[in-house]
Length: 168
Image (cartoon, rainbow, N blue to C red; front, side, top):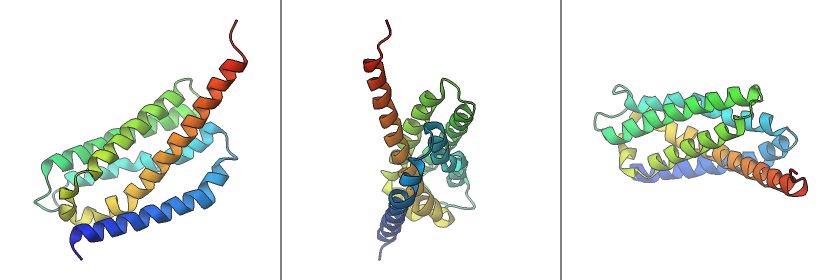
């Protein structure tokens, strides 16, 4: 098998396992939790996205790692991780801006992952950082989707409440 084929196989299998675990265990359990708690739990893995800066570390990735990919992935993950931490703090303190921060984090974080995944030419250069896209990224994708689902449900519920109870 070619390197890219191995990468894709590992990525898809890990994504499948995390998706099944989410559907079977996490989604039903989180449905019993208040929105702020459920979102906080889903954001926790993203608070560690500073690990993505590993792509900027020459001792860990191949010398031939495309600099554009390394910078975008490393700093994109750092920004996403910092936004995740701010969102966690806002949720924990029940701040009015918490849901807005979660939206911002989730859009930025998802965009960062989409940008990284579209750059398949970087795959052969991952070296020791291979575990990040083959193990951590699928977890991040699944939790991003779960966060979007919760946010959209909350938004629809909030809109229905405004229609039922209009402000005079």
